[in-house]
Image (cartoon, rainbow, N blue to C red; front, side, top):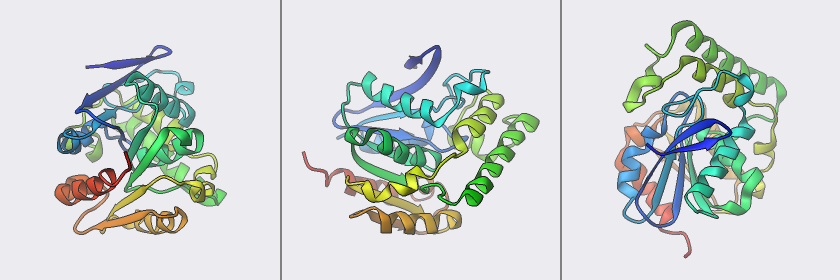
Length: 252
């Protein structure tokens, strides 16, 4: 299993296929394994790079809380692109991974060819709403500290394998929690082709999908029927069709 050493923290990643690079980032308490079927479907024309966010899966889970932050996660993403020799890439992210992909655009817009945002949102401008989100992140952290990995449906579902409940707790506090409204504020600055995918039954994120569609010029929203927060699992054929529509429409 390939790893990228980031100042002593090993970041696990996998590469399949050949062609333009597609960097896939998973949601909180999931792993890069969630993209396995998508990678198999797209590897005929794209080089699919999936990875485990620090604290998740086969990536390391350092004990120091300071080793978990959005800034470090974004630096991991940039280092992964460097490791596979990609000056630019298409970024696809689910939930937390979508928020990180949008955050990456804030920091490294020139390195992005296109965005695919799956079951995600742009965060919160309102401090009270953001505090509510952060309270949920803290509750998720406490769950893992008190109950471990076992029994948490998303932690072991769909082939995910985690090594550290404490890593997930620290990732919840350090990466899942939000501290500003920069992503929301900079949505109008996105100029790359953008696909927004949301499940019709993913009630908490339907409004976020609508908002992003309105704020990102030229973006395309796809609502998949009979699908929840993980539409790539609930409707794999329709999901892959939507993503292919974005990727195959890119110039060059």
